[in-house]
Image (tube, rainbow, N blue to C red):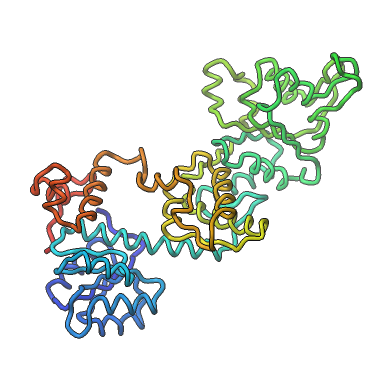
Length: 456
């Protein structure tokens, strides 16, 4: 296992000098910054002057129990997690520790990996709480409607700024719901054409028989029903920008006409043989792989190259982990104000589910989900039961189909152990393996070839 790069700090509290030494050595080897205290009083004194991310405390100690320390931390330190270790395991003790505020409860004897896993879980919960609070107070960064603090979105905002400073044609790609029109608007309103029209056209939403007339206009009598001449979208966008969304849905004849516009900067109205010059910047978007369509012969190669001068590929929401809670909080505040509802907060468990959900509909799906939550949730805390069923069930799947078989097995074994209060005999019976096999599986993390040493 690799060490921690962010140097999370851990205070180990135990009246046994040998236990303190072993735990400090093992956790320091993992890259954590470690402190030790032999009593609750010493721990409290250290916590008054030293910020600590996690306290790992023994249950029974002379002069004050671990439970007393947990209570003190929960009453005085909002930014510190607690993990309880005990050599006297009982269901009642675990329940009481959790009620008082311990995030993790580990029974002796335990392996190194059990210790590391419990520490990681506790620190992950702390990070979730911190990210939730940060999202509630953070002022979102907007770029003409594009919002995000993740590296992916900072890179996109940089690309948008560069594209806006040119007159080149831009192809915006990305899954449905990632904000392709927002990116196009950001390019237009950041450019020298910002004071001129921005005209969006959904090429996939207009029947092919009407698309030419809609784009280029028509003269009177050009076809049945053409009672008067009418300008098209290209005329409306003259001097500004036209955004051709779902450009991959255009037919072969329409692709030829679009290519001519790009090459000649002129359009022919339907029913006219006279060209009209237009000063229009073209931005296009697609949620499909245009090059794959070129290879299949359903999209013109020359048009692809004309459109693909600058490409901006928008990342799916599942790759913008740091933005999910920022966006959710922004949408919650916006809808709360719109509908006259209290501004809701997300519980740490709900934040965990939102971050682990795959978001196939991307930002549009997140916006719709949050709108529903604001309208339907009672009270000002959004918790896991308030979330849509599909999302609640996804929490049980962790990372879904992106995990290895070994990772799924390891998680299932630990879930079974937790359900039987870490009773390895009962867990082995439930899993259909013997205790020796269970110990072997617990001694290695997924992908690890050599088992770590055992801590007792």
